[in-house]
Image 1 (cartoon, rainbow, N blue to C red):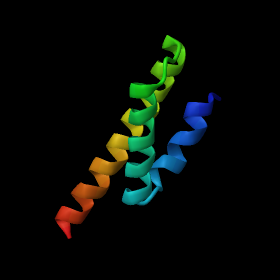
Image 2: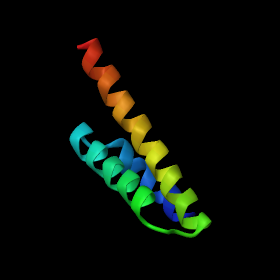
Image 3: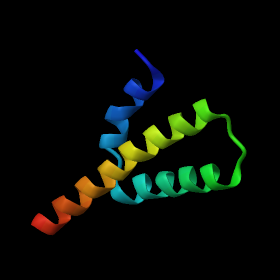
Image 4: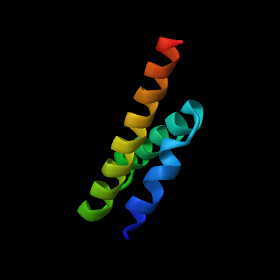
Length: 64
């Protein structure tokens, strides 16, 4: 099992604020660092999962 597959369930359980903070950190790193393509793709995939988590939390809040 890959690291990303192991991390996904934990990301789905993160509170909105933590997921958003992690997502912001990833975006800043991708914008400011000169990373190899493989690392950029890994961060992009993690960021995509975090963005989905944030969207899910917002949708849940709207339904309340």
